[in-house]
Image (cartoon, rainbow, N blue to C red; front, side, top):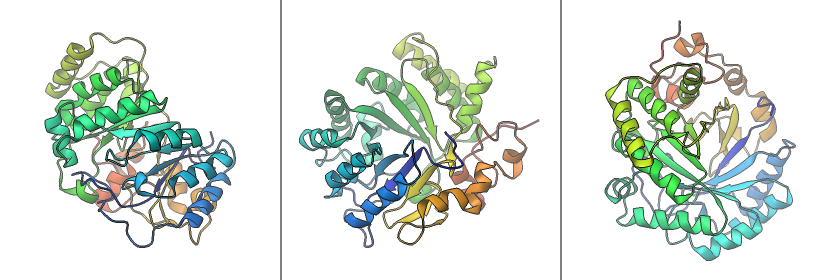
Length: 362
């Protein structure tokens, strides 16, 4: 796909409303919808605007807050289906996530859903999510989605309080039959600004662990951790994993949890990044390169989405890999390109170097 002309994924923050208060929430979600959310008619026009990218259509990922707080969700899924636009859900695990509603949404066209699982134990996961009993409810939700034939993606945030849980989460991903494990590297935005991100060296060691985990039958990919793709490329070229304590500990637990790798790596290494293959629409229609990079590009109420994606100067520079610092000198700048969101959060420059990566280009 030509990522200069169309995104692969269009994320739509359908609402800021959510019953949870997760410690790392990008959106700083609240219990009630905020004023200014796109109406049903405006959301329908958004679907038509996204369809104007042509085929293959972008996959619309409806997120939040909690997408299930939208009372018009079924109508919008049906409209997307008429437009031949894939519609994926990223719901919160709350009492709104019922088997009856998911069954209806699947009949209307939803085939993929992502569920957040941030620990392999109730103690860790429930502490992140802020709700006692949420861990067991999350496992039950994943089983329910699988029972209904939904392709499940498990999302896990990597931060100081969750990193040691990764081998156990990998085991749960395999046991529950999830198809994809998407690992989020913390960016200091929203409520996540107060949490503990890993050091660049620890990020590197986690990426080597994830390269190992990708050999257990499920796809592994990262969000705001594009240096994972560089690590995978280096491993395929013969690089040996680091001898760091964190990697050694995580890799050892992975082998104890799941045994030896069961197949070839299924690491996803498509060179997407914020603004390259990805576009984000806020609850109020604001367009940004991603949900973690709050740089205003326009608004769907006033601007043509296709033109913004194809012609905005920042996005054109991001797609051309016109970066500063180490990212600009790196031979992997097109495959990786660094986290544009982390660069922006750190320096205010979306084209600056990614402080979460410790790789030193030659």
